[in-house]
Length: 117
Image (cartoon, rainbow, N blue to C red; front, side, top):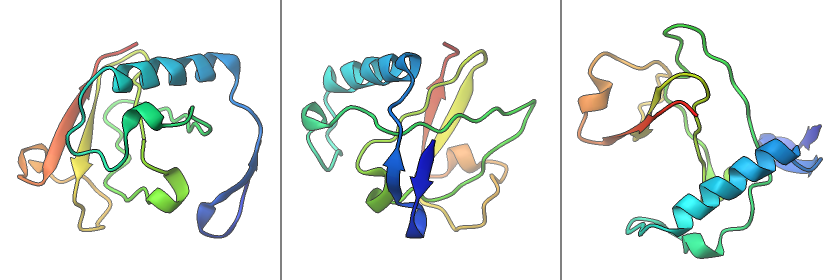
């Protein structure tokens, strides 16, 4: 379980289950083995993942654009797709929430294609 405070700041949480902790280590190994010219912090110095959100999307459902603030999530946020391919659209948002047609082609959006794992 997790206890959240004001602004969704994590106040207390239980350790990640072993399967998710192991997945986090694989993600960190992947990140640490590549150059990241736009990273604000050194990926080699990032601590192990301490939080995990698991979402299930059916069909063509979408989370929509939103903002994950560093105060709550620190420097690194990772996406992993299980069972089906997915595409993360990273970039500036108007705050509208939905994903408009053609958003993946916008100049301020970076597409990250996730193969199923």
